[in-house]
Length: 451
Image (tube, rainbow, N blue to C red; front, side, top):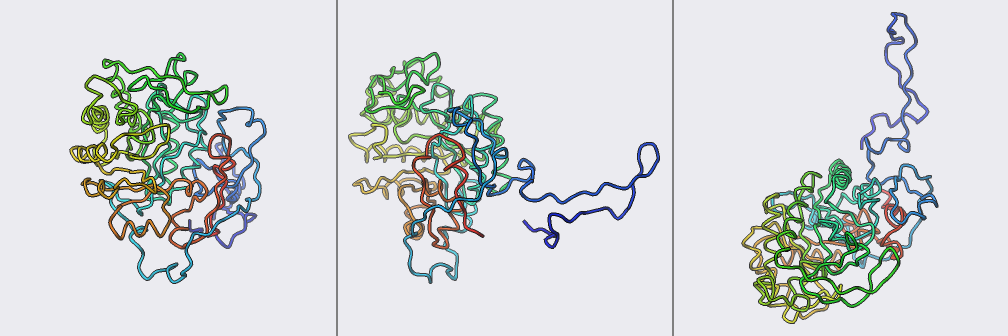
């Protein structure tokens, strides 16, 4: 921001060239002096900073597991100098190359032009407010990271049935739509673009999160291994309820309505979450889908729900503003498949029918899975995710094994990540104890570069 009054201190005053003004009664009085407003006192709603003041959270908020926290109300403190670790680059001749690498240049993703090919991956942070409504603190978090070419929101449940974790935002109520409007407005004012990740947890939930404390739903009644966080603490997963065939159209409708609500919330586009062991991924895999109807059995049948959801979402958003996230070999949430290469080659080939903007692939490393095969099969843009740094990301763009690269944990601790990648600067070390839940600490207080 250019300040034409840069030579004025915060104590200087601005006055009109006229010395007096006329009152309603016709008398004159000296015109009131208008003080300059120091940056620390700006109205964040009208003038949102890219990096707001660092904050403490009142202790009272810690007693509320789902605080609606407004960082404007927190007492200010000096930024904490966090530990950093090297970026892994030593050749300083590459810090300022003669030509900017394509990773950092403008590029088209579907029908949208992005400022660079660096994407903020969807990450659950469990900091939504009461009623799973996005808050001012969430808006600050996303607006801080607008130097990404594209922000993909945290997984957002399409309905209350899709809740799997505490304090995750939804997109099924008017209050949630209004909360997301606040987020998108801040992102757009900061020059960013944001897609919403539409998700449904399926069996990765617990009755305590479900409407009327019913069983979570899944393609088949197969209990996942492990535990889930609940309002009563960590508890074992329970055996889910298999969806009836007649219920599946209602699942598709949940996604269609969520897409419409996301449009009302001014989202630039949508990402359909068919990854990481959630409901759509559960339908794709033969370990979790043992149905005997048209939604189970063969690969073609197991993919049917995903394709119906895509068709429904694309009835709201143009296909060139829609992507799909896949994780062929990620074992997260007790998910697996006996023939992942065959399954996901079929999925990707069939996705070409929809003319989508991109596929977003979680590339688990090391793996015998041939991710380059998926890249060659898909006719749209390929977004890669999984342990990338600047060197690997630039190489992927150069070798055309990816068109875009998404980053997760690095974006948590480094809101200015594209600059750090381009200049090979050290990264802030993320505080893993603050990844999920809590307040502003570990969420909007990471220190950016000083310029």
